[in-house]
Length: 484
Image (cartoon, rainbow, N blue to C red; front, side):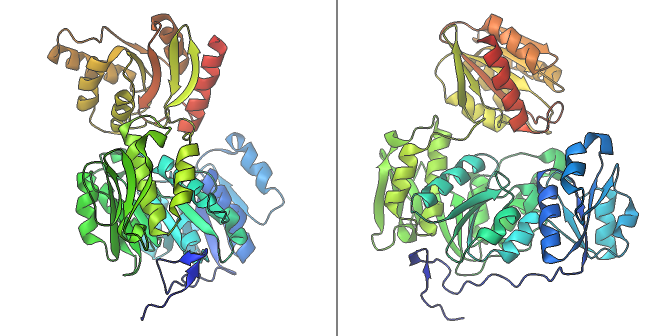
């Protein structure tokens, strides 16, 4: 197809022939939705608006889902609570799986065997979105990057929608998206592993061991991430982290145009750190070839990992021709996303920080590198079958105390003690396991000294005690405020 020039949000679109794929006709179709959390409930709201006959199913019993029952009372949505019986697939045309539902679930496997199409809210949205989408994934940093790209887009004055794995389930706002809107979408590996459509701008920030409790093997995890760009057209753009080995290798398979971001080296198209300047180059700097966005000191976020997030956001926004002045305004005003190195309070001269988003050891490593002060680390939650050796080796050098809580707490203590044996004389002098976050906060209050950072950076998921990392972070805030 010959490329022609068209306008998108007053700038030239990266996809000159873009047309959203024709939506699958769901009118009169029977659709089963698995999981009545955020994504499943959004599907339950949206599907009847296009004429689908909907059953919303959840493993939890009715007495634990009073809010779901109340929301759908009087609606055309049928509820099947307390399990996922296989007879839900009888006459089923489409099975929609929420992100937290493993594809190994018997009803999902039965759907595959019966030839029932299995999809999710993200795919249904991308198939119907009237404008090109900027999609972002990665093992770490995707939420901060997505949020910052959203701020950059809003700084243009354009109508901007940000959601997906964070914020709004975008099906909820689909009717509001006009032909000149901007959409920024965070995509997790759980969403991507089902998808057969890719956004027009697709970013892979990094791919390091994560969610191996779900994907079982690193190859399967990488394959899921790759779906964000696998189905792009030749005129689409894929953005890759040049400094991450896996993300860089994945770029060899991109079917369209490529851009990169890097703190270590120059790139031909994308964004990099040139001395102390954030710069964009190539197609990301249309008409100029090289543009300085802002000095590094303009970034208000802590840590080199957040410099990478800013570079990634510039590369993504540049691929969508967001003006440099909008990028600059966004970077200068952006203070980060809650539960990510979020300062909660200063108590007795110690800084208390909420990094509940850190659900993998790699994220805890980045958090520890963000502070020069002695750290009292609160780590725990549920294990994701990830290696802790590197984190433990760093923690014994960077922490005065490690307080391990929750389901994985005893194993964390063992990791730390083994690392202590390898580093006699290291600063870490107290390692202790406690039952829960409350006990961890109380002990941290007693252990912390003026000048310390008390850092909640768990390294594990929240699912042993909380609905999600945000609920855990909110509880931490409340506990710290009670100490005040």
